[in-house]
Length: 223
Image 1 (cartoon, rainbow, N blue to C red):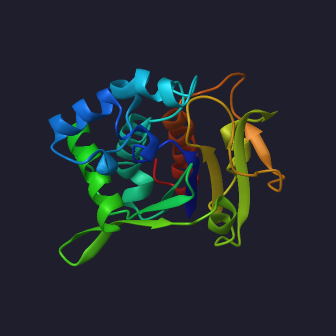
Image 2 (cartoon, rainbow, N blue to C red):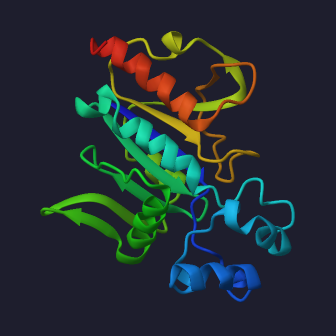
């Protein structure tokens, strides 16, 4: 089983300090929702983020990353075969758990609505099955403590290795990938000794995740 943990992911509701901002109120009226229930999206609120968190708009409010990444992962052969477990840990120590059976909306706007419902209700269910769950107060370390297997941190400044050297067999493996497009981990990751890079520069989150899944599929005989 390959466990992919996206750490410090930039998925969050609009922070309370921003609720009365003019741009936020415009989006709230368009969405017909209170500002407190809307997922922060830098593509719509880039200037507003910088007004309250100077210089952070390049990192914060990036749910689009996970719209792409989760669609790639959920449709992978490894996931369809039951060999993939995806967990999204957020910058605010929240945890999104995604069932292998979950099929995400094809529309980005519908995806945002789904995540907003998840944050509000705590779970998304269909036909008696929990497809997604959401919990607060979950640190990255508490997530990793769930796994008694080999743990690897992916980091662009770590030792460079081929993916085939990192994933050598189909033993249970927990891989931590930063869920952000800029900067470094917020959570303490100093205790994770095994860490690698697969390229000489930063790659997109979905590229790294896809390469790891592909390698695990090859080892599993799915390709």
